[in-house]
Image (cartoon, rainbow, N blue to C red; front, side):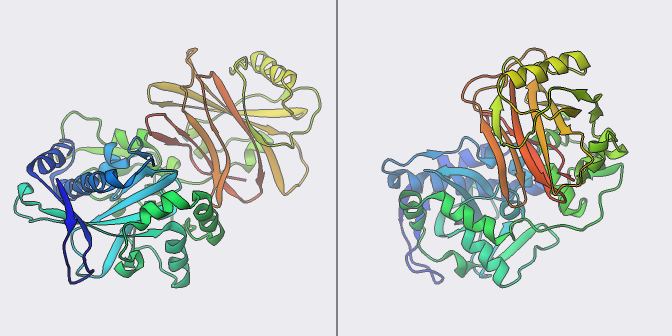
Length: 444
């Protein structure tokens, strides 16, 4: 592979990377054989773009780190359903590579997920044009590094011009928004702090638009050979994208068949109003998702007003009231504030060969306050430890509430939160290998 400069009518002397036969072969071999034929070309183009970025960026790092550990393109089926290369890391910056085949339209298509979902939203968008011939994979020639735009500038543009997402879960923005200086990516990574961009994005409050589409009906059938946007509303699609475990279920059969279809539980795709949980009431959607109600437990009086992530290896979680009461006592001995009366709600799921159990603890209070304090406890069943590097996160549409990354194997981790009435919030777990699992979005 070679890099050089080639003139172009659209942008003068853009930086380019030429492909050699080995690059073409490598990209073609990266296409998962479970992928429907109709989607293989676009995935192949994204792999070429990733190879080009690797080659282009290597001599420019000069001490900066570059990681593909969590790259969405290397995680099937995200590589298929997410039409961008998300979660690349350059220095401390998250980068999303957008691969296009032509600049003649003057427009760039950005997946809605890469704009609105925190799991995929980057600090920097990097545009790459892959020049090839449609007749044969082996005819691809070179890639052009077109330019960059920061997430805050993109969001500000969408806000200023009131740009709405299209029905196919994408945004269309002008090519000119990316400028013509791809080297700005390295300038950002070397001289700026990601927090500056992330705070600005949070302030705009337009990177997670509220959807009022009707929920997906029960027994919604997903055909893996058809685009998800033709079968789900955006809320359903976002829930699916947030959980690789659910996505994997769409492709877990060893061979495709034309009739291959998968049932998606609609309750998992909706926002759950859990106000009833405070009164010890569990509604049907919650039960359908696998939540179950424990009995009210009392402990010594205390106020749960401080917030922050903690861990406790001695904590025991079980549906047994006495065992959980012992767990509360253990927490209090370690200085954790626990309300005088709590109501545990349990949820269990399988993730990366771990049986994860979540326990939600609410104070049982009839006071009509603007905020509710809650404790969320996570542990692995069967005496397994949660792996070092696992991230347990709570967030709202405006940003992260609490996040904890394990710096060693632990049996238990928990978060303490203060949540406003009417505010939507969600919890997610990120495995060290980059896989995500998100619980349904909740609101009070």
